[in-house]
Image 1 (cartoon, rainbow, N blue to C red):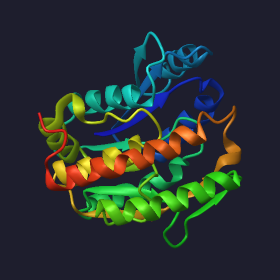
Image 2 (tube, rainbow, N blue to C red):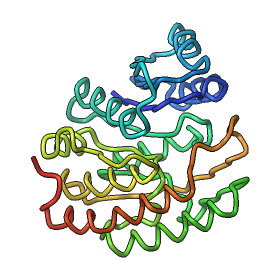
Image 3 (cartoon, one colour):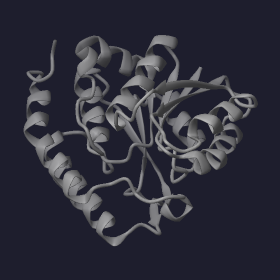
Length: 250
């Protein structure tokens, strides 16, 4: 089984485009989309219900907006609960900037023995277009800094578009429980990757080229630049603890 975890907050028009593309990418595969409607104020809930009549979507709903951390944790918890050894869990954005066309290559890497596969902007063939310049430089700089501190062998630590072996997430949940992810902002993707790498004992990481087109997204950005920078910087001392196994253990 392949689980696709989609945290959703006010993404109604984007989901109408994204879900059929996920289905195309996974034709003939046993898969389920776990969509977490995080207290959306638009038609996200209605759109998901409509799409679930045609596609295998499991809808989980937060009655109020609880943030990316809570939505991702809810989705991953459900995937771990439902899954078994040999399954794959994919995380991706629901704003249609992550093209499902990359999923097949990610699954091939998992089948070849990778524990985690990252859709990466920074490997050969990767590219990002229509992305605001400040976000390009922020992402590049943050990846350089966190790469030095984390010890994780990847070029794109901030990409949330990933495939995980189910067993990696299971072991990380067993070690950390509710403290699987605690960050409140976009830095959550780095936190999850580092924790799965160390606490899930999943050291084989592969990357595939990601073509990221920010122009496909409908609606404004949800990123607060100052909060995002501060969030990443606060991760550095935490990462040092995770590397030694001293942080976040129950």
